Length: 78
Length: 207
Picture 1 (cartoon, rainbow over the protein chains, first blue to last red):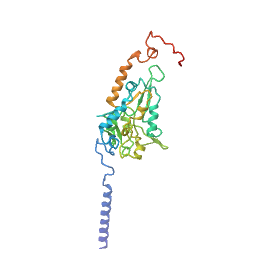
Picture 2 (picture 1 turned 135 degrees about the vertical axis):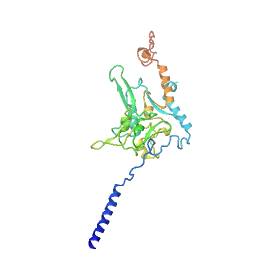
Picture 3 (picture 1 turned 90 degrees about the vertical axis):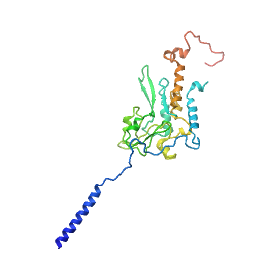
Picture 4 (picture 1 turned 180 degrees about the vertical axis):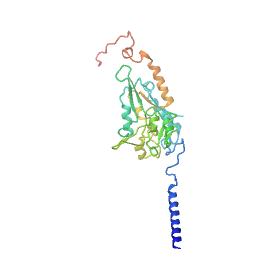
């Protein structure tokens, strides 16, 4: 009887160790999932988004192009 | 659609490194990192040429293609940016870039490679507009309607920045006006065409 109980508890213990051990083998995702070829970072606010340009891309483009023309001395100096 | 580009006129660049200094100062770039640098070919011999190089904001950027964590983004106006919070500092982008634009801060006793840093076309970076973003990426001049400071600071206007089409037109007009060959540099340009007589200075005029 005692022997049977001993082997019973031993088997339970072995099963428990096996379950705990197998849990350790499990592979859980530890990093964020990357989607191939797609930007994964934080969103970027386009320069025309904001109070200064009132979300008007046209206004911003005109301002940038006008500023770029300042690099052209043939127009700037005339 | 605007595509922001740099163009360096090698005939005008005088290797003053003003663009490098302006960039470092404006964006508070850490020691050892050069977002822009001036490369000189045939230094000290006739035919010497200098060109200011930084990220060229490629339309099909190889750095973005090789990045294992996909931290690169090409904005609607054609600026290539990256998220430093995602970057793992692997250095693949450095090997892929034909211009050597990606830079890695090397700090500490063993020169630990940090997160990549590169030219942002003075467009800041991804994320909310706050002090942290300025610290990571530098100033967002584009949102203020200004061009990158390196180009705006260039004394000889060798370095041009802006929409690709506008910049190309400026360069085309410049090349057309300055001519070619001996017309560009030389005696004729400095002292007038052959046969021209020098006028004596006016009375009382300073020479």
